[in-house]
Image (cartoon, rainbow, N blue to C red; front, side, top):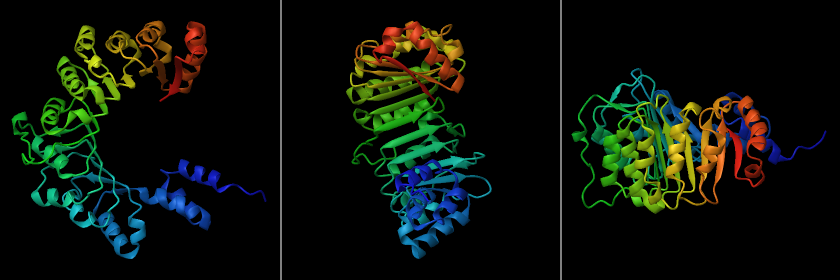
Length: 362
């Protein structure tokens, strides 16, 4: 029987990282497969109810070496089981290696964070990433308190957040004046609560350390101004920028994109990712015009291959790439990828030959 190198077996196990039942079978196959299978089984742990909390707590006492494998913790907040308020007190000491905390909701019950929660969640001293998704807070100040409670936080992702309607004025800085500013390196947010959270970050954080920014669902000049303010504050530190233009972009004038994006104040920018429909080609071209003066920038544009030429236009997109840069067209389907790969050498053979433009699949 031919021998299969363990490196190949581990690569196969890596591809099965999200198939729990298959990973369990792999862990029981042989001793050589156990470490890799166990790594993926415990790397990301989801908490939906008190049963998962109790199971992780038992893991600390019965198999402490396994609790150290948990690097990412996902907590799902729901009406059926409010585990959000109690999981830090039970698990902060049990899971010392957690580096990423994801908090999401399946039905958006309102969240009000009490003092006990904020005190115990701060014991997750290794958490560097916080992802908040589909959550409804009582007030905006609760978001700020949660962010400030994690001492090692460097990455913050906020998507589809809501409040019960309290005004933005309730977002008071919960930090002590003597505390050092937040040192975020990466921040992502969509249009929901963008204005008050960006305004708070500009005062509570140190924007000069921001290396990665992502803005989604930009559909109004007000949202664009919020993004522009944070881009300008990040300045030379900014390396990666994502701009997601919402599907109906009619409210976002082309001249607003070109005039208000201060990309010239981010000379260190290396990656610009634009997400938009192909028939919003004028808006994409406006973004690229704002970045034209930057050198060596890798510009990635999400496209629909069948409508690219009629929408943005290949030549127009490439013209927006600065000196030393490259244009990456990211298509959704295999058909679009193959169509673009066949079309590019015909439309711009010189750019393809020089490696200035290529195609990727999203």
